[in-house]
Length: 265
Image 1 (cartoon, rainbow, N blue to C red):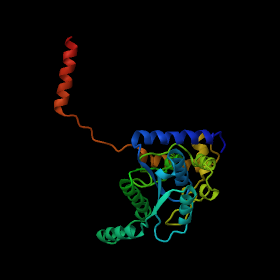
Image 2 (cartoon, rainbow, N blue to C red):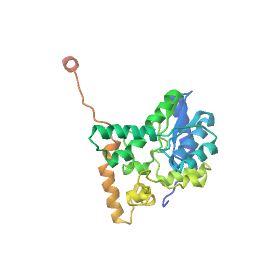
Image 3 (cartoon, rainbow, N blue to C red):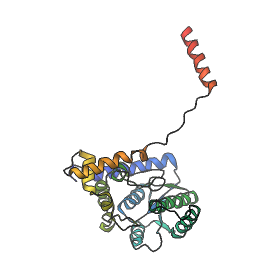
Image 4 (tube, rainbow, N blue to C red):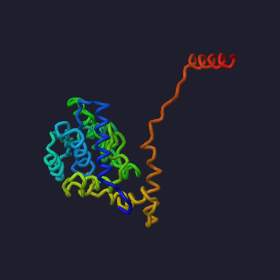
């Protein structure tokens, strides 16, 4: 990183933040985390273990069919010593895809195939939460959120988000501070459908993005154009859902009467 970041202090502050969250929102609850074996879920799981103890942290592994990198998820759960469950989402994915495609006369977009797995995983983790007295951890980071590199109603969901204001580089630094295995911190995120890395899909590196987010500095003007475009295009993903505002006539009249009474005084 091209800027100062005190990983130990931020790690300690985040651990305390998690403790405070559970104190206020579920003193007897468990932290339930979808485990991919990548840096984000690894760091969130390790932070929760330090905050709550390993007996209150549960990992959910959710491969889709035969998934070679599931070994990283197993490695993390064993390293942290946390209880874990494994549920393969392939049958659910195929069933929904088949029924939707049939109802749409054979149409099923590639984007649907990309977005449905993270949405299914959210449903799975949420269901485990309901059965295990859990609070669902969100594992999104600031870098991905900034350019909208996430799935609505998928990996953007959760009850608490320890990494939401931390860049990829900062998450990795905290992972090193937590003593996580290098294989987990540096595991290259890969698109499960096309086999491309996140950075190949985005067209720029996280190092470039992180520096731009934190300092506003960027040397590659083409990368700047891509980042600015994605940030603006996907800004709606992070906004609260618009809600129709209704005020009853009775309430309006009551307010008007109150105002009139105050003016007469």
